[in-house]
Length: 69
Image 1 (cartoon, one colour):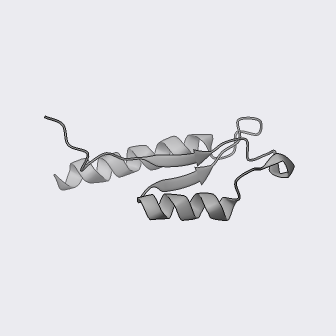
Image 2 (cartoon, rainbow, N blue to C red):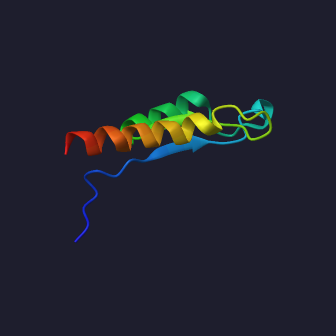
Image 3 (cartoon, rainbow, N blue to C red):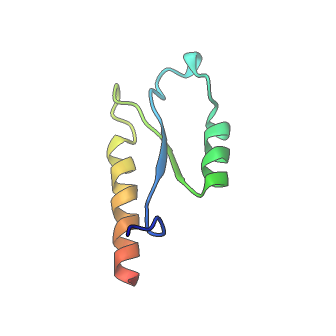
């Protein structure tokens, strides 16, 4: 049986380069992520901002979890 105790989840807001077309504010994204116990990051593939950092955040947290267990 699998448990969700050690699941790492990140809420990613994409297309952060299109600020004028935004439907969800950064504050709303952060607030939702915090309420759900998730990591939060905004990314843009157009300018490559935070794409690698999003994956690095998840990998680092998985490493931290596995190091403790």
